[in-house]
Every structure is written in structure tokens, then in C-alpha cells.
Length: 60
Image (cartoon, rainbow, N blue to C red; front, side, top):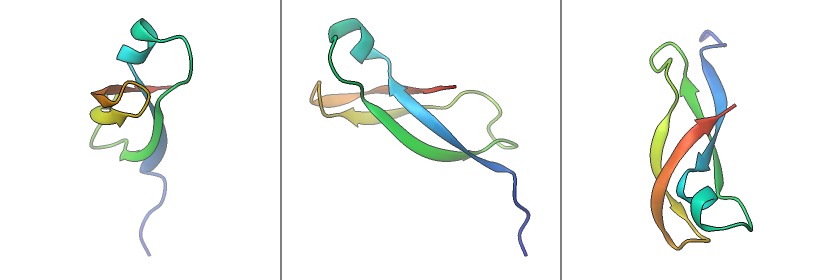
């Protein structure tokens, strides 16, 4: 059996959305391996409210 405990669930939140809008939040849920990527995750994801691809950063 495989070991458990290396992968954790993280929430990604849009960085540009806070600057431009006051309604709604663009968030994504994903998993990461905390041994391979100990730093906070940054991915380009689609924001349906702004209707464009923006940078989403990991929040705690």
C-alpha cells in the first residue's frame, strides 16, 4: 500500500479579483505534495467573474 499523508488539499484564490471587484470570489480546490512543493502554490486559472485567466495563489 502507498503511504498517506504527503498530499494535502489547498485552496487557490484569485489575486486580481480583490483589486477590481467587490462581489463574488474565484476559488479553486486542488492537492499538492508538501514534500515536493513546500512553498505556496501559484497557478494561472480562469476567473469566470473577470472572464479571463489570472494568477491564483494558495491561501490558508
